[in-house]
Every structure is written in C-alpha cells, then in structure tokens.
Image: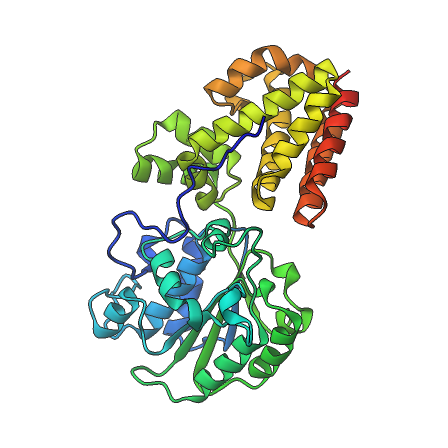
Length: 398
C-alpha cells in the first residue's frame, strides 16, 4: 500500500539551461520599498556593518541581498539605481566568484568530515550550481541535495573561525568585503557565540548581510545587534503574475497556485512543478478519509506505516496539504466559487466529501494535522503519529 509521492522533484543541484547568475534589483519582482531602502544605504554611504533581511521563505530575500552586494561593488551604477551588469565587478558576481564577496550557508556533516566539521567553502561548487539563475530559494531542495535522509543543515563553529580569518584580510578589488549569510537561524550555539565578537567588533570595511526565514530562532544576543529590514510576503496577484509570465500558466490556474502558496513564489513554483506529487498526496488523503469513514483500523495501520516510510519533510508537507484541504472543503460548502481554490481532481472528490467538514469538526481536524506535522518535524515516531492521526480522524468524521 506504499505510496511514493514527491518522486518528480528534481535533484537539488540540477539547472534548467540557465547561464547567467548576476542579480540586479530589476530581476526581483516587487519589493520596491525594500529595494529603495537598500539603495539609499549604499548611495548615502550609511551601510550597517550587520544587516538582517527577515521574512517568510521563498520571497526573494537572498536575491535582494545579492543585488545589494552587486550594487555595492558595481563601478558604473545606472541612473535608475541598479548595478550595470557589465563592469568587471558585476561580471565577477555573475560567475559567483567576486573576490570580495563571501557566501555562508548551512551544510551537512557527511562521512567525508569525520575529523572536523565542514564549512561553506567545502560545498561551494554545489552552491554555485544550486544558486545560478535562482531568484527564489528552496531550503528543502538544498537540504535534499546532500543525499542524506532527514539531513538538517547547519553552520558549525569552524564557519565562524573561517569567516573571522577572511574578514581580517584586506579587500582586493573594492572598498567593502560583503558576507551573504543564508539562514543564520540554523547555526549552532558555538558558532553563534564566536560570531558575536565579530559583530560587536567588526573588521574594517566589512558588511555582513544575513537572510532569515525564521529570525525568532536567531540567538537573541546576535539578533539584537543587527539592523533589521522586514521583507513581506508577496500578494497573490504578484505570485500569479510571476507564474503566468514565467510558466505560461492560465490566469485561473496561476491564481489558484498563488493562493495556496502563502505569498511564497518558491512554494508556488514547487507546486506548479509538482502536479504529480500533489496528485499522490491527494490519493493518500482520500485513502485516509475513506478508511477512517469505514473505521478500517487494519488498513489504516498500513496507511500509517506507508506514510512513515517517506522522509520527514515529505510527511510534514503531506500534513500541511491535509490542513489546506480541510479549509478548502469547509469553504466549498459555502457555495462561493471565487473563494474556492481546489484544483479539478480535488473538486471532484470534494463534491461528495465536503459535507462531512462542518463547523463542528473543521478546526479540530486542522489542529490534528498541524500538531502531527509539528511532531514529525520534531523527530517523533512517524508510525505512532500517523496512526494516532487516523484514529482521531475516525472520531471527528462520525
């Protein structure tokens, strides 16, 4: 009864015939206020030595940081307030080899690094392949690229040591050395403690730009010392417009994907690319609902084991999907088509199923799925969590 969904997701470091990797402000949709604020910091020579771009995942924060770094180093900025894209510095940014730009990102301690934890430098080739032409980051895809089940990338204390050494060196081609640090919330405590001194006593003409999806998880002593810029999630209209222009999707399909993506373009792209995976999630959801309605405990146990055989990230994504379908089926009962964002296959199932989702149980069912996802994310036993979900669904569907 095992269902293998998410099998169509591409390997993390594959590219789609993309050559160029420079990043200008004009390459990033919307975020006009943030772009202007970053420009003014550079133009007025009031760049903080430690800056944080914070906001939800998949909205282009690292691209904004890259565009700022390229703008800082560009020797021929345009009248419109952007980097030129053709000077020597811009060309170095295009190849992701700018001599005064340092990338820091979470990595995994594989078998190769038994004696000493790795740093970002050890995975720089993979990083360049991953980031080329990518405007919107996808943490799951990056983590999957290490080929280690349930990998949880981090930054180890060796990262801080390496960074302190790099920033002690004089910049070569430009005034500023710029550090672009993706997901600082994933660094371990030893790394954070060592980094603290660098932030409190910054190297001359050094700039650290951190990009966080969950800034509340950054060590408070570091977070309090960062100048923060909030980057807000995209509107559905911006996401839908991006999908229509880059993927050729019809307006209705693009808007449906935008609505379920929570303002994240990377999530919308993943959903657009993963139609087969989503169909398999729907199949898994239908199995759960039908077996729960029949109170078929034996097959529900098989269902729970089948789900547990998937990776932790896949199980979490499935429970997010279940919560969404609960909300959508409740709205379906209101008979307001413009508020309904089910695709064709989902609507076909919901035509008969939605009547079981009412004011009495919708909130409780969503809570069941949300808690299950949180437990799985916290490394709880998947077989136990999934069977517990199935039993609770039996009780709530009656």
